[in-house]
Length: 319
Image (cartoon, rainbow, N blue to C red; front, top):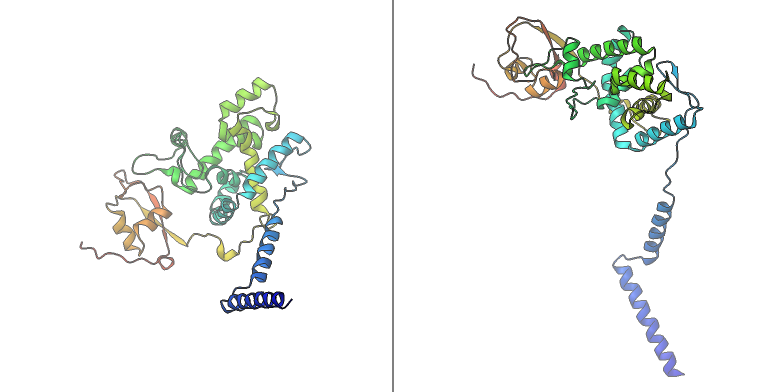
């Protein structure tokens, strides 16, 4: 009996010693277990929700037939893909705030519905990208199309990168397509598949509406992606995006400088206005070389941003 009591006493002493050591080193196994359980509990509550489709939707005033289950499914796909790719969605919302004010008045001036600004966003994400086929700029204009509509395109100047001029060309294309098909939705689809391509499918399938056409995957998704961007960006807070106005991207104020001569060095030209060569090119991406070749005396307008918006340390130049 005494031996057993001694053994128990020793065990109690050892247990107490271990507890005191753990306490001395700040280790609390009870708290650790609670935190672990809490973390596991939080993870179990991570839920991804399906999205409610809008009760009605239109493109350029033309009603989207949401009563058609196949149309609903195609729209649902694009809403899910574009909404839950959150990083890209936030970037598109911020860039839209930057470039919509440039594009909107040009669309209005040319009689093109405002919804077509979302087509440009779907085409390029408002980045001066070049497709594998050679389509270039915000509106992804092919070289032949650009020249056909009057843009200057060469190694020195490429006006497909000129936002205002490229937007006017896109407007003319939309207007021509609308006149041909009688539908803004088909005009939008034709911007992806070409007027000839859409016309061929309309005749082959003997229908008159975009939503009745069986098209290749890219064109089949094209208008629905535009619709999804319109819905998400037009109501981004309702889709869970919290962006302060101060976090939006914006262009600095600019002044237009008329040039009808050669500019032999655009870096020097930029420094004369207190900005860097990089900044000059970012505001005038249509200038494709380090100089401006203008032997014909054509009048160009170069956008020069307010130098106070940029920190620039120029290298001392010996002239």
